[in-house]
Length: 216
Image (cartoon, rainbow, N blue to C red):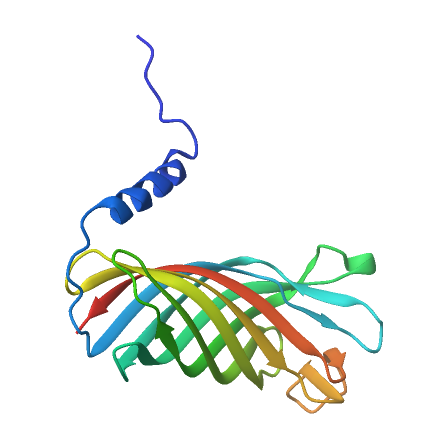
């Protein structure tokens, strides 16, 4: 007797009908949440450094990202938010080293900002943004970490599923400002070896996330 196997990708095909069902069901009365806590998982892509010495691009590998959003009610339509996200990835080279991982790299974002919530019966769209820091943490022999100023802008929806619980889906872009004449990922012993030399560059990434929001 042949066994029946689940077709590949079936869980992903169930996501869209599930979201449609949540939208069509009667909307629960969303309580006036004073504090919101949203753990999330997502997919982050984009990001590269142009080395002024070699002229080559060093690309950040796309991959999973995790984080936490802490929100506090400001008005009925606005929230203050503290946003944190981490991505464990690798930096890949070009030219002779195309596609080869140079070293592992953790990229952290810590932003203080807020959101504006638009009215809606079942789905509550919002826009948001923040200002803060990007922390680059390379995993290599003696390589130094780097902290730079960054900003983010995003938009998404919140779907209440009870008075104290909701689903949050968001797309958010990040821009990190790298100062002029900057050597990054250098050997901490004071040597002259640096993995990347950039000048007045901008490092950009995009994050697509989904999380569960708990109203406290």
